[in-house]
Image (cartoon, rainbow, N blue to C red):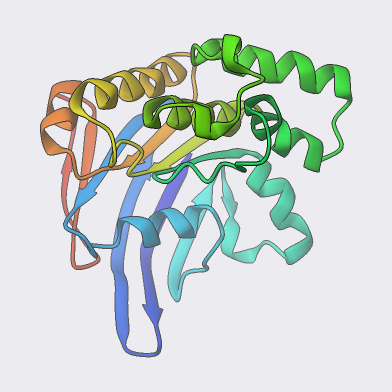
Amino acid sequence: MILFERVGKRYGGRFDALANLDFRVQRGEMVFLTGHSGAGKSSLLRLIMLLERPTRGRVLVAGHDIGRLHPGQVPFYRRQIGVVFQDHQLLHDRSIYHNVALPLEIRGADPRDVARRVRAALDKVGLLHREKALPIELSGGEQQRVGIARAVVNKPSLLLADEPTGNLDPQLSADIMALFEDFNRIGTTVMIASHDLALIARLRHRILRLREGRLIGDEDAA
């Protein structure tokens, strides 16, 4: 599903955010990405999202060398990926329903299909009863669930999350991770960047460890 071949990313001509990364993530795998602040976790995810392109090496996703995609192909590529951010990035003047519907509305989906898929996604994260609420009316954990619903409403084959539990207490963090495991069980490939080592250890999935932009550990699920 994801293949990095001697991938490097340099900023400003001097700073190497990533260096010589080689790893493969199989379709249907769930993988954690860990490391200190500034280790390169977000840079790695940004390469997969095609928000950045590698300075060296190749990144392949679903067999496609994404560094070779021309600009017109990028929007279609990104529709295959769901992304969950730490700060939710919700539109606070729109209801929960319309926040989740946004990716479908942008691509011009049929309104009946939008309604069906949005409500299915909200039901999956336990928030169907709050579809008319505004984000400010929800707790931090509920807002993160909305972010997850929005990320999966397109039924992506790949789900990425950048520190999705960084602002949540331990119980809410465990609940959010359980949702990611639910999506993984139905075949979605999941990659999560997280610094919560204790929670990651309990979940027993593969762990990729970064230090100063280099891969220093690749640990299989216990």
